[in-house]
Image 1 (cartoon, one colour):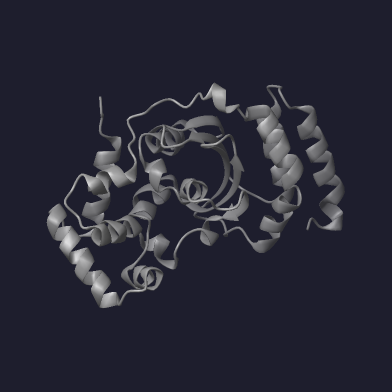
Image 2 (cartoon, helix red, strand yellow):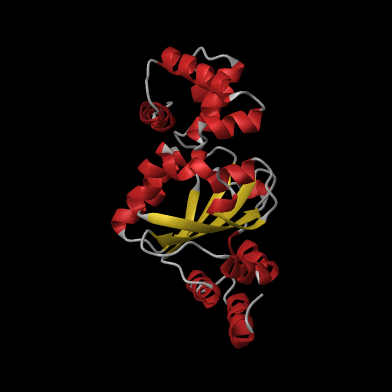
Length: 262
């Protein structure tokens, strides 16, 4: 819950936000409202529809950050984004921290090293909002590597205002299913990459988890297999792919995801 000292500020901020629905100042008012609850360095709002290229609705990044976090992200890496995957896999809409959606080994994954660290993100807090049958709006608040992770207090504060926040965001940015504006992009489903090579179903399942940041122990626990069995499947899959490391796997998947399919 919001502390007594900030409850009036939080309610006032939400009132201001509702008054800005449909206006040019909505995004900045939303940013100011969320800053009452918690500190963050950047805010990005993105609309997704299925596996089509996502549409950035708002960001406050500089040109260098935007080139990676918006432009490059939309060409394929979004398919491995834990928040996007949470929506695709039916996670309950609401407010989630990155640490609540990823395995313990995520910070050691190639996806984290090659994408998150490139924009110097330490932690994210995401609002996951349905937007039609195959659509979602995700609002991401990010903290830099020099900042602490989002704590339970920040999570509880944003959750306390979720109903009016969600209603305002959907009213301002939401689109009916008939007005699908997601651009067909060059990005392809990650499963397309796994289906393009001669992996067995079990090998493909394990490689999919590796790409999402899982280690052999967490894969074993998730699939109910012995860790040694996972390592054998992983080694065989790497051999079929002609690679020898997780870094090479990530590079191969990224090249596939951003390749032009026209």
